Length: 333
Image (tube, rainbow, N blue to C red):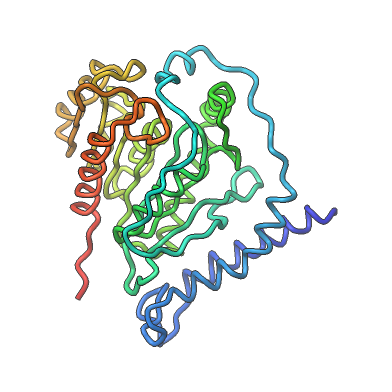
């Protein structure tokens, strides 16, 4: 076995050990699974896991190639793709979190014999267990923009895991983004395994008492998919201009409160499609809120894209945070 293979094997063993050790640790000085009041509320267990993994993670990343994007693009995936011109993968916004956070890249899942690395972040002053949020990236992949948004969510009082459904790949090219996205569509079961383990990571290692999901664009569609995967266990789902369905058979089992944030001028996700989704939820008597913002297009909340609308983005952000707070907040004695 070469050095890269040994590093991956060691990282995998360490991940399995930590996933068990953190979730089962019971030390009298710890108020919750992360925190020690005797040490000023520093998240010792998670920080120890992060520090012990940092070298192994670096070695594992170095041993991975950039990966080949899938060459074939099924026509149905192309047809379903929102307006690419409305998006950009430029530099992330310089918006600092409202309070200090602790963030690191670490493995949260193993899919198809490969470790999956996500962006894990929580408030630096965290003492008691906090609700968790799974963040799902756009079709550009898990990039700095998404990490910055995950940090902002964490600063609001959440333990956040920004997942990676693209196997470590991210891109600035729409053609490559489409190809990678289609590879996920064609291997839907692997993406589901990824999401299931992300949820379990927040339950077991994060000890999150409640869990929600939030995603944009490609991730918005997967936010709905996550609600379908966890119809009775997920506590909230936020969909930013993602693909939706009016298939009542699929939606019938979902008991997750849903917030949908859409654009009136979105050519890829027309208002008519959103209204059919809304009607299906109404027919099924689900808990939902749908907002269609006038005079904006797809990806209106992406500050690096040409459709970005700061005022509407802020309205949607406030709405999303209020929704998460309503359904994820946990009273602390």
